Image 1 (cartoon, helix red, strand yellow):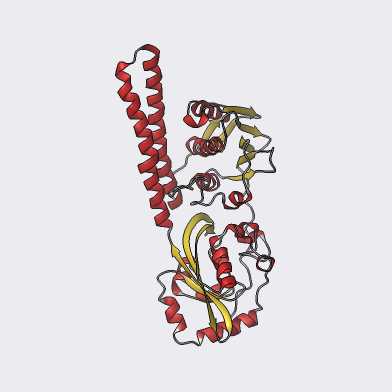
Image 2 (cartoon, rainbow, N blue to C red):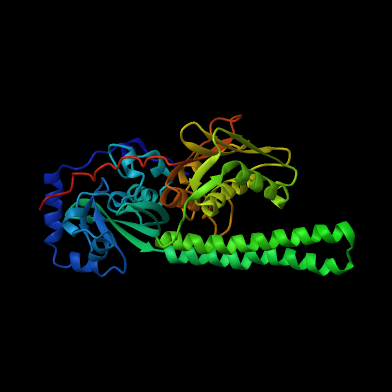
Length: 391
């Protein structure tokens, strides 16, 4: 992945009066605003520092703000990407922006003076609710009155990505489970005694896995719509982890690997047991997929005033993977229709379990650990930037 140059990662913004002058020149072009409004999706024209100089009606409608209030902002700031507040210079200047398709498209366009198309996956927080956008973005360089500018157009491909996930679920994951179940049922009539009992248990496990796959997809869709109903009850953390470890020891992903539960501190937590099991189970599944035979996965719980579940494996993630974790359509595995794992963990934990999720993957030797912290206070929200132009 190409690194962003220093000038891009630390660029300041144009002064307001300079932005106003450019905006007024563009607004004076009789065909420019109607042409921008004719784009089928959200679009804007930006200056060299990626600040909006002119926006179309669809972009203003998407973010539910008057067009004049978007002037001077960068794309991630308009969409309220959860990353832009991490650095004082905003969108395009954080470490995470190095993996952003929008940043790459703009950079490639500005450097090569040619159009560039990328996919961009953004976690947003609109009206206090986390949501995910999957976009196909196109950056096109133009020059008006000697001023180098960029036309930046967005196409929402969220439904396309969701459809790919569902197709993979039903055409691949569920089909594989059904094939395994059929093989067990075909062999069952010729079995007796312990073989039959073992087959019966394997069939029951596969049915449970089949139901879990379908229910997980249903609940994720409801969670994204904001309609998922959640009830909190006392949950025994020790029993929950013991059951998950027993399940994955008999799962194909657990073959040849050591799975160990560790519990310390008061083990009763207030949570939705269904969602908590789904969150920890997803992290365990990811940890096992990242592990080789002979390696260990440890799932632990401790409560020193705040309940924390942790899932540790011995592998270390590379820097590119770290930057894109929790994005809905990002996956470390090849193929389309993937990428809902860590995204669903973040969505369910932060919106429905009233907690937070983080990870550490230091230098080789430390492995990777994901932490799910229940009852964590939400981080303070930084106010929107005050550098918008006043016309």
